[in-house]
Amino acid sequence: EKATLALQGFVNSFHSTGEFPQSILITGPAGVGKSHSFKALCDALEKTEKYINIVEIASASQLAVITSEESESLISAIKYSARGVHSLILIDEAQLIGKCGEAMKRILNTLIFGSGQGWKRSGTVPFQGKQIPFNTRFLSLVLITNQPEKVMKGNREAFERRFKNVSLERYSAAIMRKITVKFFEEKGV
Image (cartoon, rainbow, N blue to C red; front, side, top):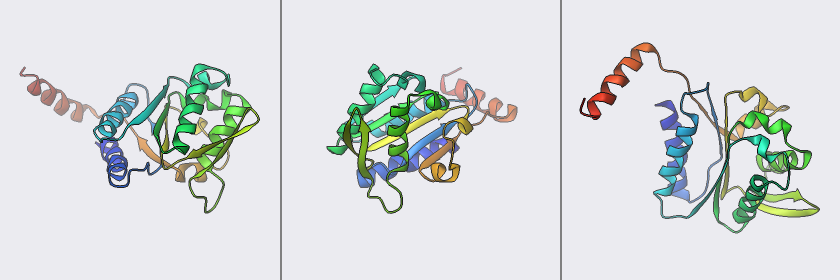
């Protein structure tokens, strides 16, 4: 329920402004619905009449090679954002960002931290000797991890300010009993 409320606020803001309000960090132990929450977010966003380019990266480790298909998809989404195309980038197993190559770390850091105080949500990222423009009004990162402390090292407070934190937790046995009954009632059992 907490995750639904947090993500609904993101969707409502998108519906009213046509822009992504910020990036999202979804955390919690294995099996609590982090990936399901992302799918629900995509479903809610797709109900708008806006085209959204969705890039799903199953593990941040796939960004270790700058020429990988996943890295190229991420760069394309960045370029699209500068043209006003809404792009949502999911990076699962985000705790492995530290294992990315230096070029990809610089790109992700630039997207997350921008150009400091007062930035206008747009800028450029260095990529293969060029500067690639981006606009975070049309670009949002969704990082998913069960080890949030390993996602970004350094200025933790600055990192957390830039993300909507959605923390999932296991239900208690009492709540599970209620959910199970409701689940079977909805199925006619």
